[in-house]
Image (cartoon, rainbow, N blue to C red; front, side):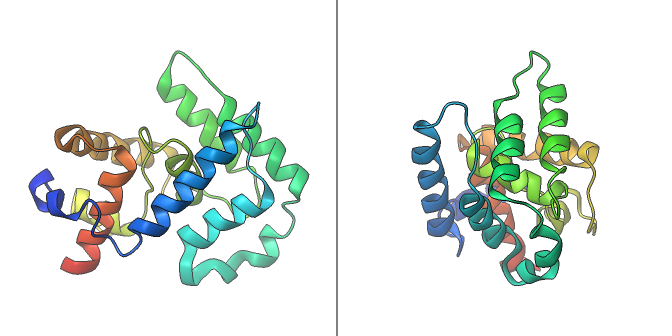
Length: 177
């Protein structure tokens, strides 16, 4: 199981670090000027390319049902949800984002991690393998909560945003597995 010391030197070492930083910065600038917050279809597509990489085309036909209006409405609701119970808030955000065609927990986690990098991480098989020492390819919201708890602890120990700790875990897996 991965430790903070394992990833301490990898904060900006990920091959995706600059692209991720640029995407987070662009989203933050765009959202700063919107009330309520929402993603455009183009911004959503950028996130899909970033998250899915070589698997982007796999569900393209299914995702084509997601129109500009649908993406704006669904992401607007998901990003604006606030609740005193943060676990419930997380559940709501995931369930709302997963209403979009082709979006399951990993893609929903990517949306949230890029928009709220201090709070969320991206769940995938690489991170899971390093955090829990087990192979897993599909994830539920409870799985995500379990993963996020561990990544948040590492991020707190390192003094990093949660998303950056997660990206360092991803890079660690690429170079050590």
